[in-house]
Amino acid sequence: MEDEMRILGIDPGLQVCGYACLETDADKEKLIEGGVIRIDTRQAIEIKLNKIAEDTRSLLENFKPDIVAVEELYSHYAHPKTAILMGHARGVILQKCAQAAIEVRSFSATRIKKSITGNGRASKEQVQKTIQTILSLPKMPEPNDVADAIAAALCCANSVNSIVI
Image 1: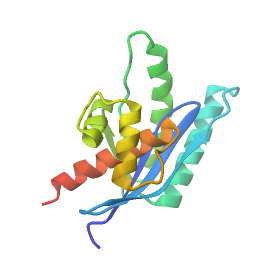
Image 2: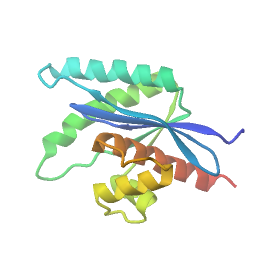
Image 3: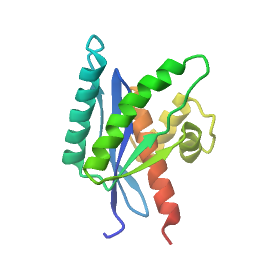
Image 4: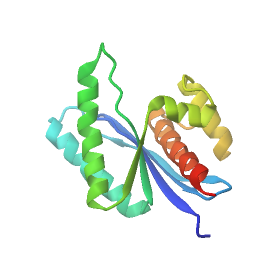
């Protein structure tokens, strides 16, 4: 089918990166694989970033996505350092996508939630339950990092399919 597409959702993190690969066409989405990359928190940041880069390259080679979907950075005024650290992980992921010439689409957390549940302020559990229903999964996707990666990929699929006429 020519409008079939493979989307890799990535939830960047310096301790855990969630990922999920979806195959989608105009009618439905199918989860190919979801998982996490665990990073040793005792290592120096440059070692952590290198691990994220290597694992991202491996995911891109294994899944050969048409598009990679990632969440935009969000900075809470009480935790600005968290956003800066997340920016490092996200930057490495974006660089690996650019190196592999794979399109990246970024979505805000509220847009992802609204795309999945209809509510931009939905709880994590609401998002997980909706993903379970949409993809006919036997149980809710866990941990949250995987659910967030699936949600980003589904949001991307919804945005791509809404453009197709």
